[in-house]
Figure: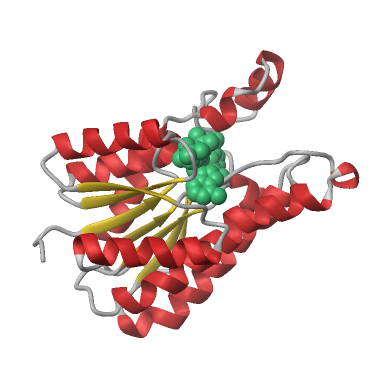
Length: 246
Ligand code: NAP
């Protein structure tokens, strides 16, 4: 078994997850990169991680499917023999006004963002009990903290992630598993890239810092919560949002 810590990062082919995987690799972790469909992007993340001198594997899985999450943890156990760090980052949006939102739009977002986080934690925690480092970081959103018009499904999923984080933190505090959440504000990724210029200007003007954040801003916060400097921190929500949630 490697002396290096083993981390799982879901949704690590692109955006925030990619930046998190690279940051954890820089910090000396072997990384399992979980992606839904974009194999080339996942392989690119993995090769950047390997350049940092660690092992990296890519696993195609849909976190909204319970059996896929079981398969992910089994594969990581075979590759790295352990799980020290879990970052639940995979997420989607299906924005619509509440009264126009379809059952499908609501369910898809809850299944990927909330149930995916639950499935991954349920599969990883039994393995983490035997690890030296025991860190879970769940990616929520400022939308889950404040709510957001047009995002009833997404806000509910991300508020759910906060509840899940706090419950798990209480449940596993005696085992010294730290479970925290990071709530990003508006971050430049594919998820926000489709906004038209007018909507973007409106959003940026509502951010106290008057600019969007970068994926690396979130990765730095995740790396802190996943590192030794956060050994006495659990059940917290760290907003990384240029002041949006003040
Ligand atoms: P993104 O650029 O759209 O990337 C999404 C990532 O998640 C991709 O790697 C994608 O894989 C993966 N993914 C999506 N559905 C999945 C599923 N069912 N199973 C496994 N992987 C799945 O998103 P992002 O902006 O980096 O967001 C990352 C996280 O931060 C999300 O949870 C999001 O809600 C949260 N967040 C983002 C912002 C923001 O402003 N960007 C703000 C607050 C919170 P493929 O590449 O294979 O499709």
